Amino acid sequence: MDYITVMKLLTESNFDAFLADGDAPVLVDFFATWCGPCKVLTPVLESISEEFPQVRFVKVDVDASPRLAAAFGVRSMPTVVLLRPEEGGGAKTLHSAIGVKPAHYWRAMITESLAPKKSLLQRLFGKKEAQ
Image (tube, rainbow, N blue to C red):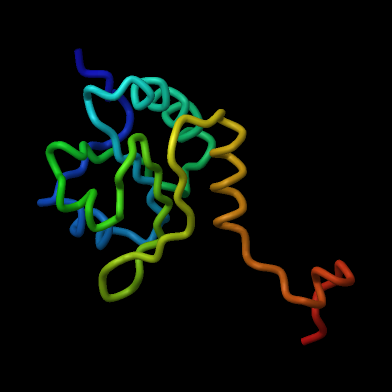
């Protein structure tokens, strides 16, 4: 039974084109069809995907795309990687995590990864820097 419902399935042949087709961050769930924890994580990620319309949620089957999994150093499933596509191709890894975690973990990971970093003065004094 196929449990992938909401998240787009990417492969080695379409991954780079998908990244290049937008500048929105991409959350990639590296999974295997035989992986029990992966089946638990899928509905969690799908449920929070609606809360983050600025992030594209996708899946990669590690058995069908082993070179893609190797390129991201995936050794355990599920592995989730949040990427920011870069101009000219490729992407920067903003965050990665291994295993099943609750929805609040993924929400915090996405929110923190996408938030602009505070300057030293902002962290120390809680104010915006004078411009």
